[in-house]
Length: 460
Image 1 (cartoon, rainbow, N blue to C red):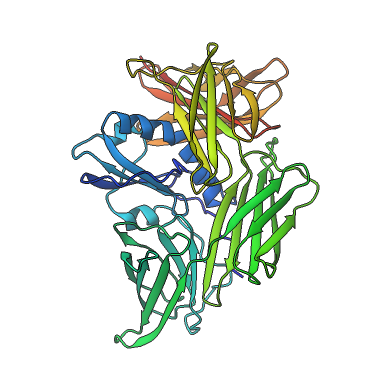
Image 2: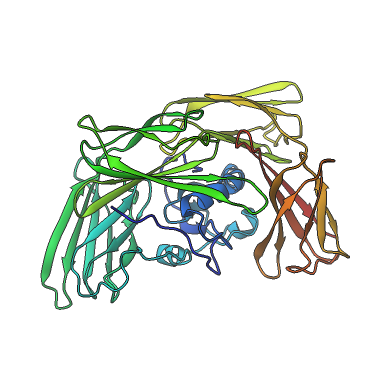
């Protein structure tokens, strides 16, 4: 069974999960989603949360014609974008770097080698770990310096993408497909040819990717129901932040074997599921191939002062989202993506954004009505404090971006009974009133998991 991979802190690391139509022309770039990530928190969880915040900026840049197309690769921790040549994407995306090489983007997210790897140079037992809706492959047990040539084909047998690289001395390789469509999807065929250092063929490993789905969940009883290839072993990890003072979390693993019908009902105990909880579903499809599928318990996320709300629901099912602003309802309909995402942006008749405010309401498929809370920020340049208002007796992130260092700084803050908070950045930043500072509050409702962001800009 594959070992669950956690993200390590990296110096330069930070779904829209709808698959857009392929854009013709343009320049391809890669936007790393993670900076100063938290150790012990799964990569997908942090990448998804970062993408929630970036999605409105991507959509705005797309409406302006700067971005032609985009799709996140949350397994690898970046977004692939096609954009107009010469466009200033760094400005459009408010501080997110844009790289021109997929390998550089993948390398910017520091990964831990599988725990069972240790030193396996003498062992030849190839293991290919693939993630649906991702273009990168985690390979181990290859043997020292084994050369790998891989291909990805759709259901018709058309070759979509290829990869090539050599394992390190531990027999480990992490590499991404390149081609017209690089994402592993159910029914697609993946093949890896392995060669030794003189070019002799060591073996060919091939499989058609199985379908793995969440069929239902029970938040109150903490039961997740899944379907996949019959009689195959599975591991499911549940990640649930407690949103407490010390930022503890539940990280529970359940293992078993899918039934003859390919089903399983997995009971995670007495703690109730919350919106935004993530599940990592691994299935050993064969001795050499493991496939991973993600699932997120449905929730909303909206940004005050912006014009965007998104939500998560059951993948590929019909979706409806209604945002009520100043008493006027704006409804969006469509379909949840493969990863469960759906969203919409408010604009007026002339195409200008309609900015969300506290008290606006959001409702949608499978979720209860939610009213956006009041959030405020204010910078004290003498004390390097960010203060403001937030719902009483809650914990949440307050963030400040420093243009000089090109990075965000974070404080896990708390509000008191009077709904007042103060976040102390004095050990991280020396803020001055002659410089510019974007700030952000990232507030998660502890009861529902719904997220409200407040992005505010300060400058002379």
